[in-house]
Image 1 (cartoon, rainbow, N blue to C red):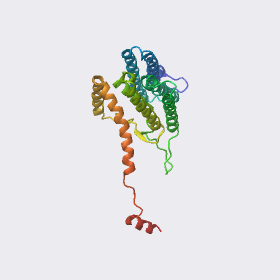
Image 2: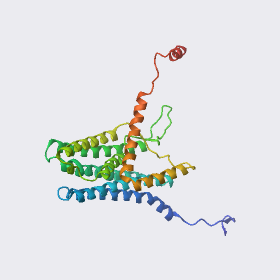
Image 3: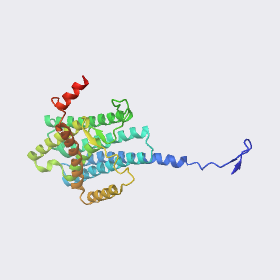
Length: 303
């Protein structure tokens, strides 16, 4: 206790300044975002390096492609952690949001587009042909759709939708359009499942597989800019009783460690199918019938 000469009252000493610790907490999500960017850069470099061995040493090329796919998988984990840590520690900042979007463009936009090209149709299709040019176009459009998806997400986050009653509500349970990490994760999961380049399957089968891959890349681009809703899982584990969530996460992590080629592909495909099937259920759900006697009598009462 110290004496205040002006008021005559004893004043308690102030608590130690902890601004340094607070700044460190603010930097923690950015560390994971930086790791996300690093994994994206590594994936692009590994894909370019593997493309050099496609014709000479296909097993070595497969090793580079597999490492690139794994890097995208690690980046997906870092992307999940940085946002969750920022929300848990209440250290979300505008610059952090923008930096995260830039990281996602590199890691889940550019890297998967390059990886799909060098692993698939880039080496299989004849350069200068119409299909080869189409592959270039679809890879570019995938990147553009991903960038647009992130820009739209940032705008929706900063401008929450206004309901009919005039109240503002943020929809934290779902994303509008397929998230770009999931789209890039699907391409990475497919290549991790079969890292050997498509050219090893022979000219005829490789051309068919390349056409299917280009169709998938184009479809992912369309899903990203669509208005379909996909679950965000942001509320998972936020309740006080989240022991089951922890046990489930540990179990899934062990399965990924043991059977990554199968589990990762199943998780990403299941997530996408869940969003598509949910939309189909809403489309075929019974709508109110205008000829319903109950509705007609209600209208008469109103009149």
